[in-house]
Image (cartoon, rainbow, N blue to C red; front, top):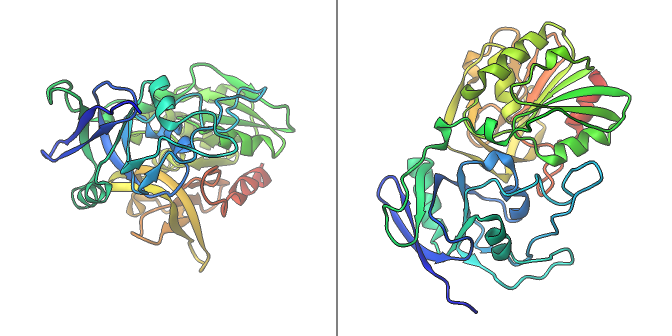
Length: 357
């Protein structure tokens, strides 16, 4: 086995963590965040919502089931991943397993990272790192190989990450009975798949595209990375669409943009929600669902107007997990009901959306 190169993770508070490289060897900077899911690193790495972020996995053993093939269906959707490429800036783990075993694996995680030119470091005390991030909040960080001045710290939330990951042109999928416009803020491919299997035509448009020029039956606003305040163009288009009173459904970033279009405000969470085990409660009931989440911002419930109300609440910290309009067919979820590597408790929300069309 080839000797691994020593590497350092430096946080903007001065904290340093030493480890070894198992990915692409090039300095990188971003926002350091943690994910408590026990599985699903191929899906998480290819989730566009991780753009600009360095992902710390709290589960200690990573890489033991390898990576699935990067194949695509006839419609262009990835067969096993959430997009065409890795979007996270880096992956940080405690114990990387170079040896892997899985019926669908074709290569190691390390080889995949090198091919995609993504940094990976192992030998890090991820418990101590996660504890630090919980206490101080998500921080800027950088991975350096030779000199700590190899690269500067970067705050990805000051960059329009949605513009980085959104499609560049209109793409149409399927030939279903109903037409759904999907505003691509960084959509995961399984969201498109969940819509297609409900017999709809999906018209995927760039984040800043004026979809109000298109004839459609329902509007879907996707997940995406970064600060929702960067997407005022999209918010304006959603606000115009509301005048048509056609069904609107948003997920993750879509929840935040729908809320902003309705006049509410968002705020940055201390360390975000990134896991497969987030409990949310359907407001007005005792029904609780286990959900997959990946977001660093939340809707401020106190800023919702009288026409809107919370739909779901997080049972851990009480933050907003979805909203709905009291009279019109507009609703959203902050979590991911389509989560391929997480729980499927809430996929019924796609049926709720289609039934409204």
